[in-house]
Length: 85
Image (cartoon, rainbow, N blue to C red; front, side, top):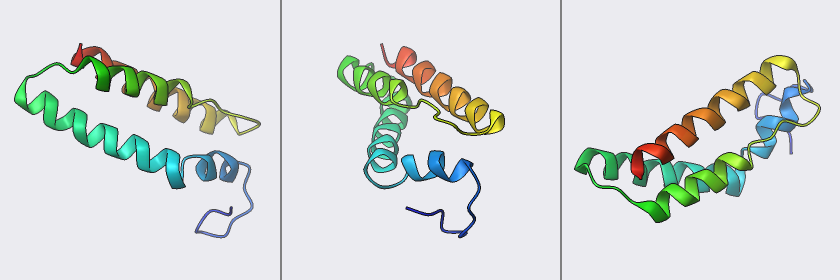
């Protein structure tokens, strides 16, 4: 799968990994998390799901910048999961 921009940059592997089902699952979980946090309610099951999604955010042969971005995204998702507990 190519990046919609059509570039052949190494980061495309990481971007492609986050498209389709993984990106959709992460988006839906983050939307649910936002609603739960706005209500002030904890949701352990959703927190576990976010932790699983965060664990899947592992760079592979990408640039250092892409690796840092994925690490930051992973940390952010894990932080949201912690807030839901």
